[in-house]
Amino acid sequence: MNIGQAAEASGVSAKMIRHYEAIGLVPPAERRESGYREYDPEDVHRLGFVRRARDLGFSLERIRVLLGLWGDPGRSSAEVKALALAHVEELEGKARHLREMADVLRGLALACDGDERPDCPIIAGLEAGPIPASRPTVDWPTSRSSSARPPSRRSPSPGRR
Amino acid sequence: MNIGQAAEASGVSAKMIRHYEAIGLVPPAERRESGYREYDPEDVHRLGFVRRARDLGFSLERIRVLLGLWGDPGRSSAEVKALALAHVEELEGKARHLREMADVLRGLALACDGDERPDCPIIAGLEAGPIPASRPTVDWPTSRSSSARPPSRRSPSPGRR
DNA sequence: CTGCGCCTTCCCATGATGGGAAGGTCAACC
DNA sequence: GGTTGACCTTCCCATCATGGGAAGGCGCAG
Image (cartoon, rainbow over the protein chains, first blue to last red):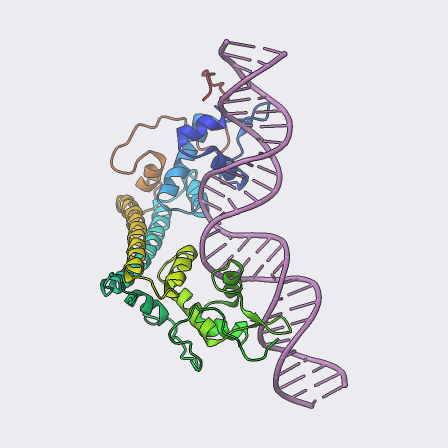
């Protein structure tokens, strides 16, 4: 079958199939005399494996390892499990991070009236670091009128250039 | 102050400060005769705003909007709140997605003995379709000999597309 | 033979960030 | 003064996974 059919059958786009071949994630497909790639069910099966691993959030590099384990008759399920659990940790870490950001932002939004007035704790929070424990927003000598209307046009610095 | 100092004070790397300037996220910095960029506290303040917005997961394009709202005396807090809440939704959606993937994978891992034997439901799950419990019999020639592609059989269905 | 759809390769773009090279500037120290 | 080392400048490349599109070749129905 052609790459288009393999793509449809596996759920991996033709573009990606070529890419996976180019980076050596999957073995180079057979070629017909015309140069067309030729796929058999085994190839499609492998591509489906890759797609499902992607669907579970595995990076291509990890999938490379998974493919190796898949094809290794002497693999131990422990290896696979360890890889999977490490990945689970990673996914959960990312999810936690996203949720934390969402929580902080929702906290700010809750304090925001959401009316027609400009006063807004969300903006205020972004202005003066609500995010705990990151970097203390240096209290630079706000000598000039910079404490209220920041994004105004550039104020003329004395001298220079 | 130089870009390095502005970077340290704002928590945004010098590299990124230049980048933000290049894409027009922040106004071009003043230049000294030498070509060095010159930053004042207001610039640092704005960079800090950007960094905190990034820390909350806003994309640079959204931060562009936020900066506009920040500097707009006529903004309504409702606008800001709407933007923030939309972003919260997005963050939570992503978090949910990650968590779902993690759950599925952990489910597979729980079913995996993790011993010396090669049998592994994780691999099996990746091999065959949708994760749940269903298992459409896979009877492809799963010869794991890596590249023994036996029958280069011609696909009998000519009508492409 | 024509026409159309598929295939090929090659280049470019995304978003946010960083690495590093080649060369200019600043400030301090002897 | 001269040297040195830290800093700055621009420019290009890489990441990660994916896609868009151009230019040209192949396959098959009509």
